[in-house]
Length: 423
Image (cartoon, rainbow, N blue to C red; front, top):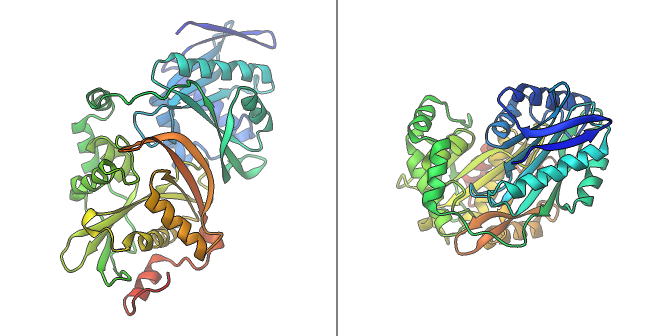
């Protein structure tokens, strides 16, 4: 990558790959911007419980430092990352970030130059990116306008998705720009696994998994009877069930049932990124001990704030239990679980090709017209078996506006004495 030179307010700047020594300066610039409510940085976006996002961003991305050529001090950073929102390891969507020191934040022209470089780097890195996505607070009007001038189009609006100092909660936009007119093919499985094994070494991931404590819901186990009479116990997964749970995931992905074929391509990644970060709640048939299905619940990747506790979930019904109308009921069970876990909003996505889930959500809107709001789409965010590159449809469900959604314990208790006709 050639060294780049820029000029801002008479200061000559150079752009090059960031070094390990630059990480502290980058963190300081982000922290200062967050505290001041500047440069599109949320006040709690990278702090406390969300601090690991910044660690991942700086570790697994291409980071470029913008330095004052006279003093050699870092004045800004450009980050090109495999999209934080795409549901595939082999993504064609690049997330772009520009962070500026306070001395450069009033210079709109320098932002334009840095954004242009971010776009250029995303194209020149030869990682197969065909589109770029930028997450921007609606109140950052100047940044939004400059993104539009560079050809970015708003594809989603997340209500109250970011908290800016001095402003409070405001909507967050996802804006996308095409980098290439062609859709690229997927990398081979062998190539993908070679790269992933370097980042997620099997033995190290296994040791970390075994030494860690899984997230658990303290109100489980609990008995639940489905409307068709199927009696299950809803419980936290057991640590030794990791392989079995992963096979259920892989089976759904292989059948093209709402999950990407290379979304979680190895058990090591599943352990580290899913099981250690999600509540894994299993539906076990009481009569046989067989697993009927499960749900995975965690904080939503689409939120840039921990306020209002945005949650997302993934639901699975095993093949032998499909066709019994369990899925549409399990959606409401999932929402009840999320509510009791303390989430205030379900901010989730569904693949456009997942017709069953889309139909279930649509039918629920007949009963509760304002329940599910579709707030946008991430284009080509996932690769689904039998479909190809697929869009992620983002939905919003506010528990606070829907008192008919019960806590799971209350919902489950109601099913013990009667067949469910209403949830």
